[in-house]
Length: 600
Image 1: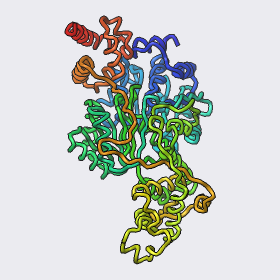
Image 2: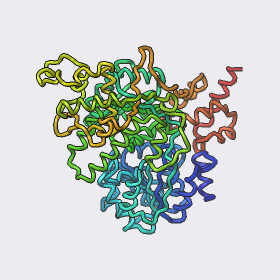
Image 3: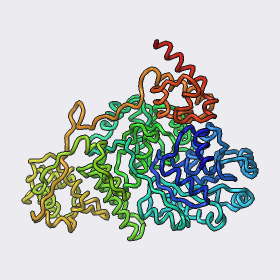
Image 4: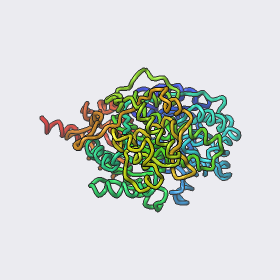
């Protein structure tokens, strides 16, 4: 551990490990296996990077995405670590050079995709080389119950069989109890020490609101709270991605689409711009983000409801990896609930898989409709008991009003029943509002007792009511037909008036703004901040790496606050190891000295 602490200080520029990093590293140094659950931004990478450098041999890191490898290798190389990756972007000659360096044990860490690792050629190369450890990153990909299953991950159990003396560490930021059990079983980690950190990301502000005009809501959020910030906007379909990116660009924002239907070169170019430029917004399907190590993403926005809490946590976790304030912002609507339920029921999965996925969707809906602290609900989902309300989510900062919806719910349920349990929300709302629709007259529904009974509420109120009744499982969606609604068994006590029902009150945003939470405090600002950012961009261009590899926003904030005057003082700033001090120390100190002189 003395050697581990020396590497932490000299190479990475940090004084101490954050628990449980030290315990994980000690286990690996002792030759034991480990399963590590740690939130994004919690420092998972150091758990295998440091012991790989202490133990004799080369550390093999199994990584699912090229971008993730490139980011990690670039950051390690800038810190003076001997790191490389093998992936499809390398030429045959470059790949041979990396393999030769690996065979000569001239590397500390080698990143490789599971598909390449599992080839007989590469396994033969492993057989001839001294190995420090195996690190299996994004280990939740092994779980068939998870949100990001990758079949090739299942075959990684071969590492335990073929190299039983080499310690293995599996790492993930997202895994409920079912997924954890599957990771242990499929990767043969029965003897592994399990380290579970808190899933809490206190710097992220969670905000979920009903969708009204999604584009306008998104634009207002970005312009008012995150101008010039990097962010990710998730949409459910490729078409929606293209349309949203084009619309944001037309509003003057730097917004780029990313999805699997695009040409590979376009995806690569957009991803590189996101990594290397500041203030770029990527609009994407969930295919984007898992492999991005960019720490200064200030917001993640969802334009549709994710299908599970795991997916939501994984995607929102891409914001604020540097520990500075960030937003997880989402709008969702009734159509999301119906669409996801239709997709779930019409899928080819077996009954057990559908039952579990249905449970996961119910948990996601509960998170959206909760009237208490969202973070408490999120943490309890992962088996963690929070100390109390967080004070940093929309329901804590602006507690939602509730209302006695018992009578309105009875009317809504009655409309479903009396119209034959085969019509969608729009039609049912028209009946309740007494619309003079030709279809309503044709079916004779203008003669029903519920016709026109709901004029005390607006159409938006009724849609919100139906959304919440579906979310609570009182109404089911007919997925085999055209999305018609039908009564579910749990609705009976409400329909009979035997059970009161209190629901979240739908709020109507004002023209100038809306009922909103306080904006997260700005991450940076001021002349010195901007001058250091400009220097960071210049150094990044010279070294052909993303700006955050030079130093991230958290380090930048320390530079602005402390204004170091010597290499010794600069060494006390987090993130400056010996290699970075030698490479960047002089230009940084020169800039700060000149700035202070001009101030004086």
